Image 1 (tube, one colour):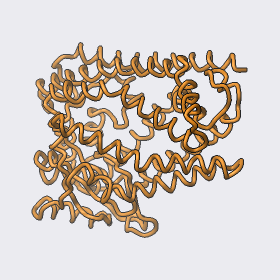
Image 2 (cartoon, one colour):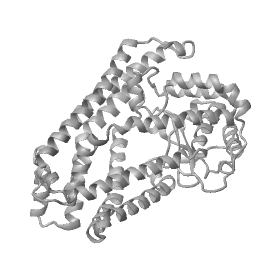
Image 3 (cartoon, one colour):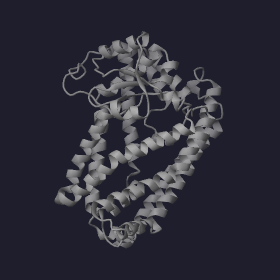
Length: 444
């Protein structure tokens, strides 16, 4: 049986690499050929210079992305077939580590190796690509501080989780994976709750949105939509990047966080239209559904792990002398993507459907189709988003519909939405029943 494991993995792994790299190359070729041409549906609303720079940015990022994909594939194959993982496990055993100490040390070493392998692309992306297009504002010192903070936070949270996971594996019997799922789900919900007030301020400064026309308009919009929030905040995102965005964060009643770049560039009505879009996600329970799907996927992964951890052919195929939890987790992490990559377009198709629904909700609540339209154009221009991606690439990778499609839908549905979808809050929209939560969904 072990002789079939490697060929099956390699076949799926190469299929994944060909599909994903092939789609990226299709998108790159489309962007290069288009130059500064403005797609017909965007004629008159998108400047040729913006279209040109957006495509140049897409090409620069896409080239790095393709190289990164190939590089990651090579690193994965090296780890799996060089004997490095069994050697690491044996070396730790030779140093007297066993049980939870050996499991934790193995997983930390694997994570550190992955981070170090990815370091060149992180540096190049930040200080070459992002700086070339005027986005990067982080100094090397701030970049290093961010990485050190990230490592410290990961160690403070991750190492105790590793010890707890091994304890449940060793002590909870055959149902250990169900207990571990319950534990990890509780930790995730706790971190979502702590993120806005405890974790995020480790990296950024958050200040209340100042009194004025923008705050008054957003508070009035939230009241009209019967949407309860823990406040409106501005984050100093411009310290690191020129990108413009916003997000909701927090369990139950979320914080609304606006990038300072967005506050500086958008009008009051544009910001209100974007906020209404995101409120639509909450009122339709999109956030809860995404969380439920993520937890279901985690449960499925743990169920698979529970079967594989006691399946000797898996370990023999990759050179491990005996089954172990650390080897099983490492192999599932490195090989799992080849068996699940086809789920990405399905998840993104659902996400695009939810984005369309949120756009319709924005039209109904903010009653400003022109503002939503101009906000989307402004965000795409500020972030240099590709105005005309290859349709296959977009269908596979993009969680939001293409800009052209969204603008056409807004134009077609704007008048009808104002008349027929003027909000008559349902019991759920009035705030009755469960409260809404989010772990940081991005606008719009």
